[in-house]
Structure formats: C-alpha cells, structure tokens
Image 1 (cartoon, rainbow, N blue to C red):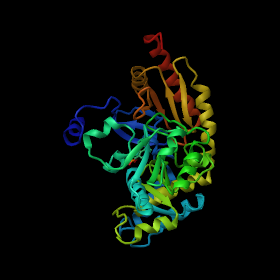
Image 2: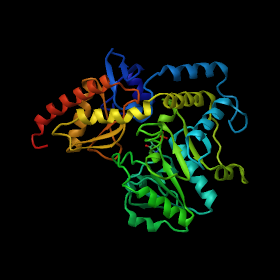
Image 3: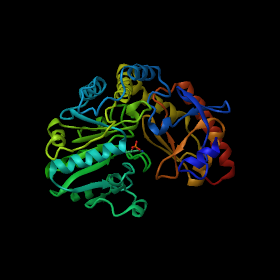
Length: 398
Ligand code: PMP
C-alpha cells in the first residue's frame, strides 16, 4: 500500500505524521491497524462538523441520487446552489448579497482578485506580509513570503506587500490601488488577530481611495471564531468576502461574495468573467447547505468561545509560552521549532492529531471540529500535557 502511494503520487518520503486511514467519525480518525486518533486539526479547519456528520452524509446521499452534475451552475438553475447562496446572503450584512461558488479557497481568491480589477479598472493589489491565500500563480503573487515565490516567477505585476497591523503602512493604499486583501485573522503566520481598529482604518482608507477591501475568511469563516465570519467581530463589512475550507463540511468548495452591482461585472462584456465547470456542483452545494444550516440551527458557533476557554484553562504548562487565536482557531506557541515538531510527533504516537502552521514553526495548530465535546477536549489536552512534560525533560531550559 505505502509503496504504491510513493510510486504513483507526488511524494517520495513518508510524511512524519503519515497514517493509513481506514475511516473517520465525529472527532476521531481510525487507521488501518485499528488505532483511534483524536482529531485536533479537522482536515486543516475543513471538517467543521467533524467527520461524516449525519446531516452532511444524508444531504450528499440524497442529492447524489437526484442529480450530481448536469451543467455549469450559471447556466441551469440548480436548487442546492440557489438555496446555499440565498441562505448565505441572509446571514451577511448589506451589500454582501451575491455569491459566486467555486471549487476551493484558492479559486475564490483568484475570482476575488479578478473581480476587484474589473470593478475598479485598476491593477494594483496590496497584500500583507506573512499572508497565505493559496498556491496558484495569482494567489502566490499575493503571498507574504517572498522567498517562497521566486522559484515560480515572474508572478502577477503590481502586487505589493504592506505590514499587517501597521497603520502607518495604510498610506500605500492610493487611488491606484484596486484592492487590499487581508486574512481577517492571519492563519499561516501564526493566528495573528488584527489589532483594535486596524481593520476599520483599512476600510476607511479603502473607502476614501475607491479601493476594494477583500477579506479572506478561508480559515476563520464558518463559525470557527465564535461568529459565522471573523469580520463580524469588528464593525466593518468587506467589499469582497472569500470563503473555503469549513464551508463544505469536509467537501471541496470555495466562494466569493460581493454586492450584486459589483458581481454583475463578471457577466458583462467580455463575458468570460469567471468560468468553472464544477463550481456550485449540486452535491457539494448540498453538503455546504447542510453544514451552514447545522451551524445556524445549533449553538455550535457560540459554543466555540466556551470551548476556547476550556482549552485555555487546560493548556497551562511551563512549556507553553502563549496561546494565540480565537475560538477554535488556536495556536500553541512553544520555545522552538524543534520542540514543536517533537511535541506534534509524540502526540501522534499517543493518538492525538496536531499539526504545524504553514509559516510559524514554533506553533502547534489546534483547530478541532466545532462539534468536539468537552470530554474530547479534556482527553486531548491530557495527552498534550503529558507529552509537554516528557519533552520538557529533554529541554530543561525551555
Ligand atoms: N486562504 C487562506 C487564508 C488559507 O488558509 C488557504 C488554505 N490554507 C487558502 C486561502 C487556500 O485554500 P485552498 O487550499 O482550500 O484552496
């Protein structure tokens, strides 16, 4: 099995956390040797409702038996996509009304950038240092890690970095800027929250210069931080909202939402504003609709804040320098990259799935399903604490 994996996929060495997956249910992943692993990562924030949530399973099964793919959703009227975009609009403040469904967070970023350039007739895009928005050529162009981009250059022209949370840098937003794109909470950088009033100041400067504000909610979106979207913690509305990951309850989907007036630009001449064969796919849209309904009809979103408190109360240990983030988007900051890796690997051996953050090697990612129970949190934190204590013996100064 493993040999075939390395032979036929773009992998040559086993990932240190690799396991052969048998199945997954709720907050647990089961491997083919019969071991049970408590999942504190949720497919990198994608499995909002845990694994195989009955409501999502039922929605997918029913839709699959009705129809799956008949035509691009812009051409045929397909109820799951219509219902999903309507329910989203009902949750969002004006003027965020019109949603374009795509296949991933990255594709939604591409759509948002194209929309901003078409709406404003400008080309300059400002992005934040240490930002991550995906890996296609467009999204790489706005990645805040210059050294990771150079092997793929030349990338999109007219994309420039600003420093996240630096109000002084906002002067770089001018009448030439099409859009400023920010993660509402920086993910790969280490779960960095915007400082008080920062996003409001960005929005104000955008408004004064005719620049669009794009907020990337691929990580914090869909309830993870105690509101349906992270920007709802602040008194602002972006011009374009980008979604992905948790939206599909474990299935691949992305979306960008803007005002109807702006979104119409994509159907103006030249007509090919954005095209995607599977965007709005009926099965995937049904999964996303079931996920959103479950979030809205239960207390899962508000409970993320109580669960955050429980995590913070249980994760008190001399090895932990800080816990960053909000709700169930938490980053445990340790002394060094070496210690972080050791903790993650040792936890895996003891049945707890953790992960790194993309660009912050001292952080342990804790982004469990929103459905995780208090007992499961206690179980995982007990393993983590045990591991921290045993690793601390090797690094007495940490
Ligand atoms: N934006 C952010 C903030 C992300 O974290 C990610 C994925 N890690 C993306 C965009 C891209 O999403 P995807 O990989 O699902 O296309």
